[in-house]
Image (cartoon, rainbow, N blue to C red):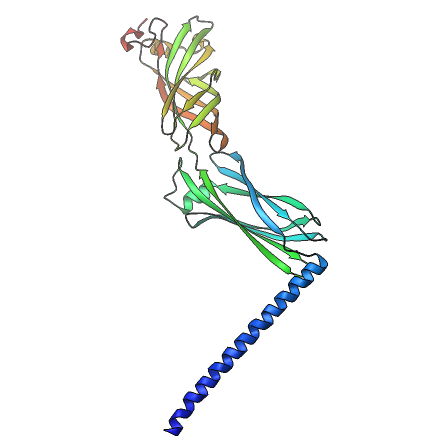
Length: 311
């Protein structure tokens, strides 16, 4: 029995010895921490702080979104501190959208503060090719993670982690149709008319239309540029109708004009841009229509029957 009791005594002794060593190490760590705080107080050094103060989208279109992250860094130290590196990551639902590194990002002045701007570009083709479920016209959540690496005397290199969340759209260009051309004044030399346009917003957010410019071709003949005279709102996934005045010379269209007057319709094409306001900032979106068909509507119609088209 005496020999069998010996290992148990040894195990207890080893355990007690480990606990004593562990306690000693913790005491050493606390001592070093206290000394560090006293040195910090004596010479006036402290850890810098950082905060995300804003996120801006200066440019957004069908190809990409430019995002700028404003980070305010405060340096409480009596000497300048270098901002060694900036690591950033943008993800959506845990999936990486873009990441990068900005080296040698500048210096924060002594007892000063600086707003550092971090530019990030989201390329939509890269996102859509990587994640099939992210569709044009949708709004996706995002999380921006930023690690600021600074070099501070006494402390050495420190990493200041930051996060910010928000939403970003994947814009989709509106669909446009020239439904009718309404005569206001007809002359072979110059005709004034109104273009009846149908705009369909295929996005999950409203579009505040405030400017529109495009060129229209009828039967491969340009009838010039048109401009929007009034603003309108196109609800998300909704349709809006707008009227655009225009002048053109019917004699330039030859037999195609007679086809339109007789109600047969003629081919048309449109290209241009619309300037819109969105919850995410202003956008300039392209509009285009190839191979469309439209008809002329004489002044007596005022939106009436198609049968009244014959002259």
